Image (cartoon, rainbow, N blue to C red):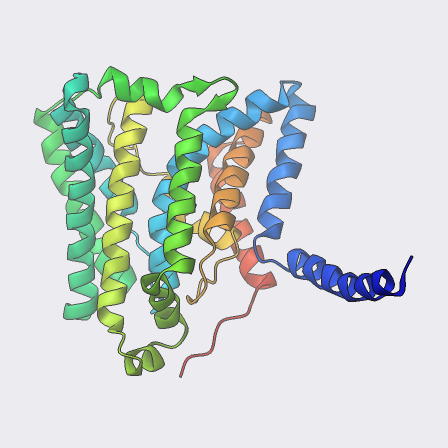
Length: 330
């Protein structure tokens, strides 16, 4: 070994150790580790194929990823933001889109547009109540959610819609051993990760969540940035509702109920700060698969639905207790 090789090795070793240390300290690492542990546990207990279990879990988790991305943006902009209207948006969008599609493949695009547009409109109303009327985020989004619930109850009593067969087939289709819908979910997650981490808008979202006053001095309008996050959340919830209705065989009044707490849980489990200022889309994806696998494990062990919600809540509390690191505001 030459002297030049020795010097190169000495320079590379500390760097590689530093990279390894950063990887081990990454906030999303527990979600990935937990996902793998629960996946292997299901295989050991149920005796089913590990790949089939993972494929099914990824398909179900994709619905949660889509709605969770919108929730992540709301939480990341700070100000105590949590969108409690997502479950109601999903349900109403499912009914509206299925009514438009009416079981016809030619209406898929129109049904998707109507479902997403309904979510965007709901998000815009939430944003207006919070940023321009002055309601707290929890109150404003919950008020919108209750209004949407009333509309859905009235609408569903006189209208019955059916998702298009093509869209239903899309949510369960496979390319070889890979679920198509899961691949789409990964692509969506990558796109929003790039938006959050590689664009000026994404940097402003995190800046507003970290120090809103300082962000305002830097020619960023915090109110508009926060409002845009609610619009994104509404649109993503609407999209998830349309896909979920197609996968489930049609809309139902309880279609989005389980996603209200779960959409918050995956953001926290994925390493994003509940206080705002840091969003991790890759961690959200791992958290969604983890939560889906956890539900599967609970069903295998015949754990009641109530206890499943208790476990989800306990996981959120545990993660928050272990990552008490809110970003100070000025």
